[in-house]
Image (cartoon, rainbow, N blue to C red; front, side, top):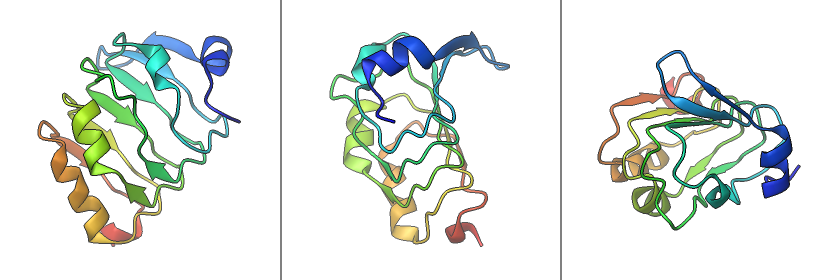
Length: 130
């Protein structure tokens, strides 16, 4: 299912998570890739895309998501990271959960160096962490 403005309007749930972040939940919607997140604007501290079918961490909107501090993309099929895109769009990202994905080579992890404010990174369940 494509991540469209319509899907976000009808299927997404907004809440305050356990650490006090304003979060939008886009869990388990069979989303194959990241797109159309510009419709979220700069309203959320966290975006939860857990349990979809995303294969590449990329394609975040060119307009910076300055407020975003946490990104949850666990249990997808992520194999690749676009560090250049992330560094220009997720400039205040502190927490990134990549647990249960398919990252298999260290060079993909090193692309996350572009996230200058990153404090917490979870790679549990990826072959690179074994």
